[in-house]
Image 1 (cartoon, rainbow, N blue to C red):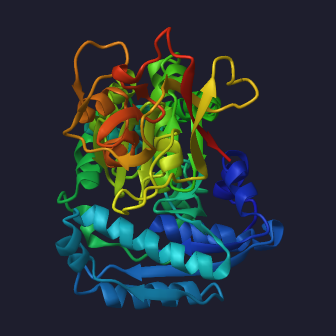
Image 2 (image 1 turned 180 degrees about the vertical axis):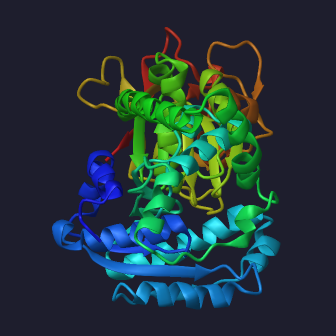
Length: 470
């Protein structure tokens, strides 16, 4: 094949970022046997020396048709004509559909990408597939019909993380090339193609768009496919700019741990809605590694939680994620609740233990002091001054049904209600430390003194109750 083939010339202009991502790499090339993947493999084999590529063709038999195994063997023979071997694998997509309730298209895609990811990791390779300009336009229309935002309408990226495998790079060198140009390339170079007959049916949504929707749009405008793809490219540039702004806003508003993030509503609510949504997506991606399965309804509910941070509100998200409103913001996590983000004040180590102690390096003391004897500037921490106790003070766990009289209030209040108003996460309320004298609640440590233990002008001796973190 002459190196000046029109398709190669087109790719030198349109696929420079993709070629840069491939240069000097091992490349797993997804080969279905159709015109797109066949052309892609031939082009990359032609450019091997120039781009310093090592090619590893790969084909997955989805097990959806009786003749699929024969097709896989035909693909292997065609690849061998280029002097290359191929990694062949078989999967049971129907079983995956039964197990997870996915559509045929979604199940096949997930199985295919999982296969590519595993093979690419074994080679420390990137993955290249043959999506073209027509595929891009179909994707945009499908996303539009689904009610997608700008991310979906921006379509597929030329270089992106492999879906379901963020550590593997997916490259689409043919993304800006019309399908007709690719078919013409295969004809010019006599490339054998193995067509999947299911591509001709209208049983799949993408085929419906390809066979019925796009032809009508092409009657409206003969350049409809190219224009839709160009619009997607414009939206990708717009989205990249929004993502940069959102990344800065997220960095300013987020405290991160492994598998958890706490978002500050005060900072995020200053941002436009588009930036807030993107910051939430970044938080979800940090916690779960993916935003797959996160819908518009999920994001709308999180936005509402962010704007109306009523204490203790909680919801669950895909990927076994949980979200709760705390005194300091919106906490997202997986696994064990990260107490240091959920609740910055003292907690009991374990409320089931008869001997209560404070967790996370917190300490406390109750010292009897005379007037003027407590210098809070020198001894930082949480301070409460209370009247002298007739007996020893001790720590205890909160029984949420019992009552105390918060300082400044004329009546008693249930501890459970008080802790809800204090925005203590539900999971931690029973571990908030109480200071007791006998059975009486003296203080909810870190929150409020009982009104009946307040100092009076006549008190010359008092107790300095202090808690601090070492």
